[in-house]
Amino acid sequence: MQDEDRSFRIEEVIQPVLRDYGLELVELEWHARRPRSVLRVFVDKPGGVAVGDCERVSREVGDLIDVEGLIEDAYDLEVSSPGLDRLLRSDREFRWAVGKLVRLWQAGGLETRGRLADVTAERLVVERDGERVELPRGSVTKARLDAEVPWPRRG
Image (tube, rainbow, N blue to C red; front, side, top):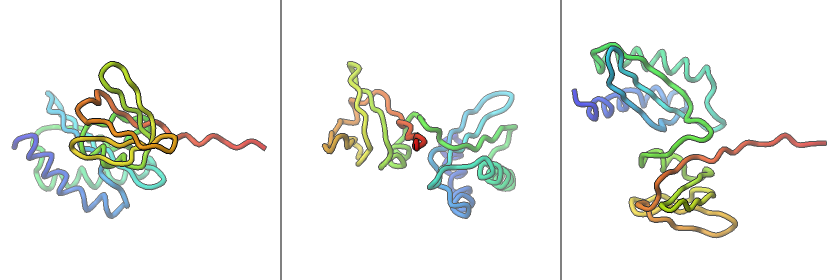
């Protein structure tokens, strides 16, 4: 099975489990290696993902993949949250990040920070300081979440 076909089929099989737990698939990564390959499943939900979420999903997803025979060789399954400052690479990750704080870098080192407002094949729209900034997708060399850490209130 081709890696792209495998990833599509795995996604198709695990989506119902993720929905049952109120989770959204952020990204699925397949790294074919010897002697063991690695399947990474990044999930999120409103309020964040707990370790228990990852454990439950890992057991069920691993069983489903094995029953369906989607991965023939030995592999390790890793289920985790996307992280506070996750790199954004795929269209799915950018769509997931709409409404979240991001940092984007363009050729020449220009950095833009703000809330990702819109994503299309041609552009990314970021809102900052009350204005909308449109960046051509092709000009963005790196993108990542910008951690939203709530600071404790004093007094």
